[in-house]
Image (tube, rainbow, N blue to C red; front, side):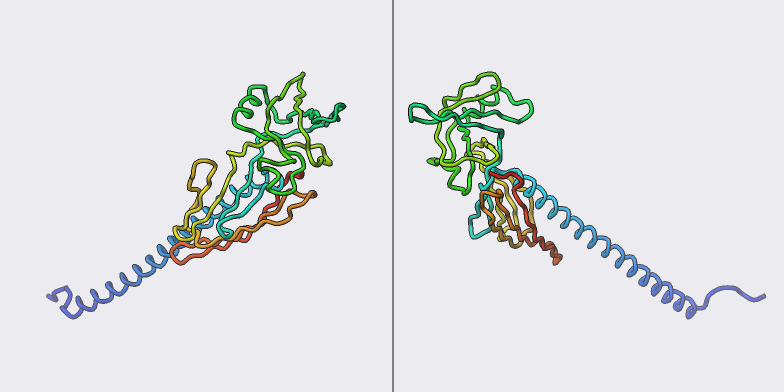
Length: 247
């Protein structure tokens, strides 16, 4: 009767073949897993970059016209967000003193309580700003909201302005609420400062902000050039944002 089984040589050959197959399968799985990890990391970098760019863009679009400025060698961009806006008319002074400015606020749900809170916070009203200095006290284009009276839905105050808005638009902003976005290439952090510094992004290895287009026809244009990098993966964003509001 013939005995069934493996010889030592057959067993060694079988083990070698199985080992080679296992190594091949493991390598294939490793390549697939590494590819998935790289794709996930790349997607996370893109998602973060898009989030930061979109967040900055949304705020800049609704900034006070011509309130944009850069600092720290172009690694920071700042602006004044609009708190309220509306339309106005100027009633000429008969006595030769300050004119009477009558204005309405067009924000939905705006109440006298909101106006009182804005006044307490040091809000200013600006008309036809053409440069950042028009929003800084002292200025002939903006005034502190003091001595404001209300009749119906119309507010009045005494003030003199150097120029008028073609569209009779006014903007109310609070100087202490100025927003500044900065990119620290050393740490890779992107921060937002509006009185309190908050991190909004990371992995930014370089950034350059530039502002142009300050004019009476448009409210300013910001060029953003930011490079994101993580584990050798780079994502370069060159983006322009235009302020939607005009003086």
